[in-house]
Length: 538
Image (cartoon, rainbow, N blue to C red; front, side, top):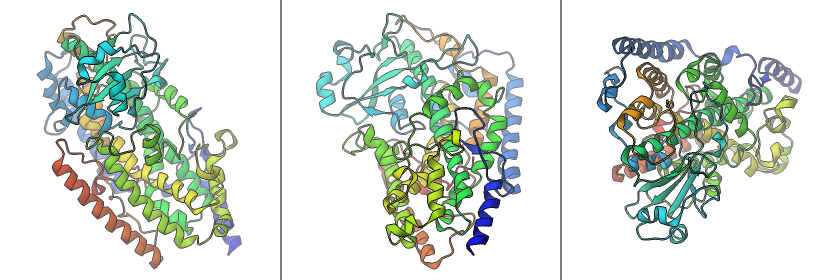
């Protein structure tokens, strides 16, 4: 039995080889195995048909408006035909409340942090922001846990697609007001203080402030697409999935637990490499950073991303000072709903792990599991996955270490990807809301800006339609919801019961989120369990 299992593992290790395809970035599968390809239904009906549908519509609208500049704000809305639908965020224009919500209940909501002091390089003064603090001083706002900030320093020195395109690396300050709304109160577009890098304020001329927010969001969308979405879900999880298939036999209980959460992951990433993330690919056409800039910040992030911190929601929140629900009360939906799902997944994983590992010695004796842990942490230069922050450094001595690892993987493949992915059309489809491309230069002073400058800065018709087409495809959920698996790998009656309990718990979570959404001024739909797929399949 042991000999045949070892032979099976040798075959799998030959089929599933790790390879760093893009220097400095995560390990991926060297050649896509036959077992990892899309089903014909998924490939034809979900991917090809939708790409064709939106591609045809985009071509038709581009041809119709060829050579036409945007005449006014309403002219942009002419691209929202029946085939595409109207992006939710196109309803907002220069809206500070919406800008605040983007930091806590949107695609990139894991950057906001409690402000405990104004950074030295952020030229904010007491007098500047006094009008926006409801009578508080900076010190009082900090003491009351009402002041928050974001810092996109990782984008400093980010290359751009062409020399005449710009990229910002902003800092921003937010105040959580008495009406329980997170409001932007200061934006500095670059890291170094200076006369040509002023702090922009809500009291600045209307379109000057709007332009500052657009250039902030250009950096935010670049970070979102390169890191939150592509690197921290798709590529990090692909390396982990390849190692899982290499080191755990098909009948291994941990393989059965994880397998549903890797559905089509290697296939979608392989498709992305030949369409989205390559020189001359889609990202290279529709973004300021281009593929060189995206790879640059992805490479930077490899030095700091940790599974036990960035991949583990409670610890991620604690590290930014926003775990406690008395902070940003009732407004931080990604935290509040995400923790419900995280706890449900962790409880499921704990029950499942304890079913198979009754003592710490049984963990140590499981050589397949220990080989898997060792390969996860082994450096990419030495042929491993190179994941930082795997509990126990991959040498699993306690069930708790294994539970944290497995929970992080399942949460990231399901809920983590859902929050980063399925709202993309609603955000990127509205260029005044979340631009991925801006022409011209960021404002360097507070002189009034005409609306024409903003109309000239946003993506032109053809580029916007291409952005809409790809984000529309990416925003469509087409696989089964969390806990309901396309293929049943778990057949042991005791384990099946644990899966059933997980499904029941997810139903309760769904009811809680639905009840919350009925009371919310702005409902958050993306972490309802029925809206969250098991895996990164799109």
